[in-house]
Length: 168
Image (cartoon, rainbow, N blue to C red):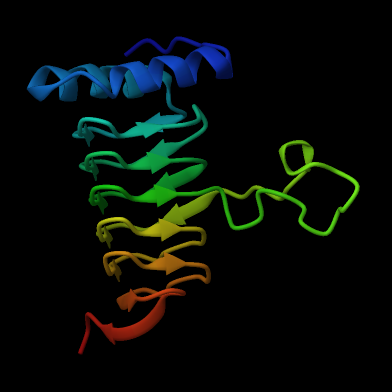
């Protein structure tokens, strides 16, 4: 599929607009849009109503699902990732320099990172993801992930802590 380039401002405007298309048509419109604009977009991407991806430099593997009203910033998703409704995948945890007292927050220079989410991972409803999550992991609903999550871990809480293992 041919790629088309947009400025960041226009890209985000379009991403927000296509997030509002209802039903199966909306799923197909979003799949086409993201496969045409993202750095990498695997086959079988499903993005539900109200969800959108903020930046073009995102990479998404095959058969990923992004449910209603989720927001993805700079990230890389492996294959078969399920992101439940209302999830925020942020560009790390340091968007603003809180120690610089002479600069307004909106003008501060933070440290942005690309958050990596491994294959076969399930992110629960209304979670906030600020750090990497290894393959085969589960993040419980409402969790705030501030530290890396290891493979097969089940994490929950604020901040997220290991509560189990998928291997046990």
